[in-house]
Image (tube, rainbow, N blue to C red; front, side):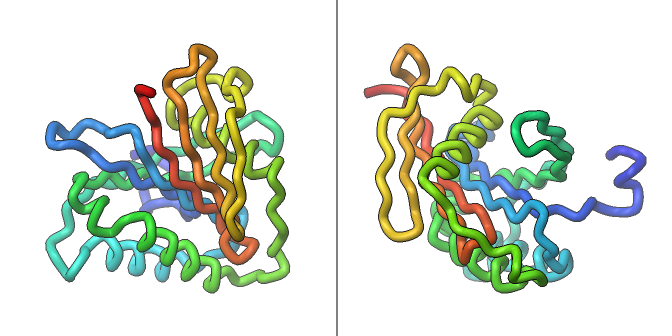
Length: 190
């Protein structure tokens, strides 16, 4: 833990949820929840997260990894990120629906509702590219756009590596115009 975190975790508004297989290896899929730049009560954030990570009141089985990331690409800045690594069975138990409900609850706790904004198809594509490039250590500029569909407030973006495989299916939405929610699946074969 760095010296700047010696007095506890930093204020965090970016979470990734990563399922692990039986060998504790990341499966390659993830859910991201991003409220970066929004004023969110940290106590509520952590208590509610803990409740979600204990399906049916069970024992917690997860690992939390803190990191700080600096981005110099478009809108730049530092992000304190939390990666929550879960066993695959817990990931399935809480499912993306539970995490989306968490994002919705998080949006209702943002103190400055004037931060609400609309979300365009171009923003959804850029968000999907950024999340794939960051998690899979690939170049966002090399990712080819295969398709974009919209259902309600959610855009599903399919991206492909230059060779066609792997491909990524990213469902992205801006919950209540405030909190970014993304579900990403990496597909290694056709």
